Length: 266
Image (tube, rainbow, N blue to C red; front, top):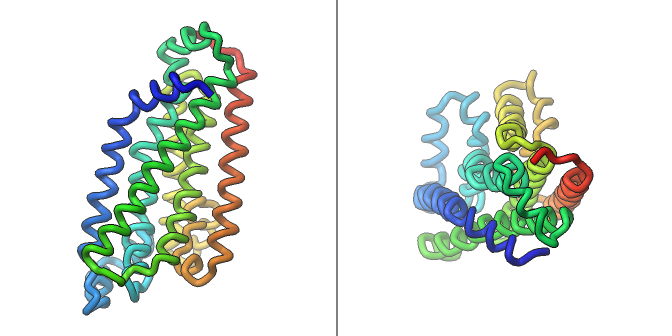
C-alpha cells in the first residue's frame, strides 16, 4: 500500500464524504425526532394514509413497537439504502476509472509503484472511507437516541441491523470498484455503479407491491436487510453479514486482478 496515494485519494474525496455524512445525519435526525414513545401508533397511522403499494415498496409496512423498530422501518427500509450511494458511486469511480479516463494513470504507473500497489491502495481507501462514513452515522444515531429518548434504544437490534446494512454496502462498494477496474471510461464505470444498486432497489420495491411479484425480492441484494428477521435471529444477521463480507472481498480481489491483467489505453 502507498500512503501518499491513500492520502491523495482522501484529499480528492473528503468533501463528498462529508456531504454524504451530513445528508444521512439530517434524515436520521428527522426520523429519530418523529418517534413518539407515548404513542407508537401515531407514525403507523400516518403511514397507513399512504397507498398500500407505496408503503410496501418503500419498506414502511413494518409495524414498529419500539425505537429500534421505528429506525428500522423508516430509515433502513429505503433511506439508508439509497443515500450512501451519494458517496459510494462517485468514490468508486474515482479510484481507477477516472484516472485512466483523464490520463493521470500514466503518471501513477511511471512511479516505482506497481499496478497491484495502486489498486490495493485504492481498494483499502474505498473500504476505509465507506466504513468511516457508515460507522460515524451509527455512532451519531446512538448519541441522538440517547439524547432524545434515553434508554429506549435496543442496542443489540440496532447494531445487528447496521452490521448487515454495512455489509450490503460493502458489496455495492466492491461492485463499483470492480467496474472502475474494468472500464476505461468513467461514464461506463458510473453506469454500473449506479445501475446495479438501482436495479436491486427496483426489484425490492416491486416485490412488495403484489404477491405476484414477491419472488423478485430474491434477485435483490437489499432483501438481505430483512429487519424483522434480523431482530428475531442473531444468527441470521451474523451469517448473512459474514457471507456478504466474503463476497465483497472476492469482488475486490477480482477487480485488482482485472486491473493488473488488462491492457490500458492511456
